[in-house]
Amino acid sequence: NDNSNYFLDFLIDGNIDLEIDGKQHKYTDRAESDKVRDELLSKNGYTVYRVEWNEINTEVGKQHMKEKIETFLKFIGLQKSLAQNFC
Image (tube, rainbow, N blue to C red; front, top):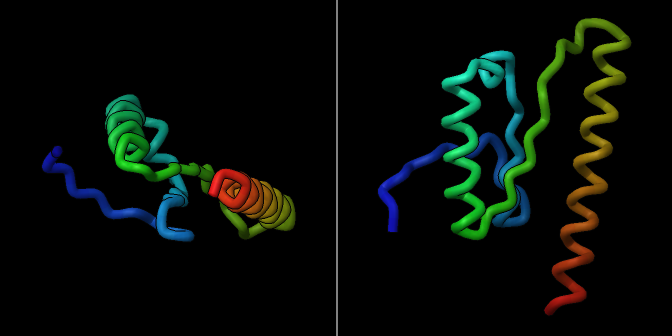
């Protein structure tokens, strides 16, 4: 019942919103609007998962992003497992 219109970075499995957050998401006004957005999406049945972007131009940066992606994939597996147990 709200008139919000949001673009999701990645919609996965129909209800998981994967957001890749660049440095602009650290600014106070953006963090506040992200919080409102996440609450509205959650209220409407979406799970918001945020990953902080880091540069991948170095091996260290690549490793950090790889770890973040692996953590997200585990999260998706847990979500699927929970959904199956409650259906």
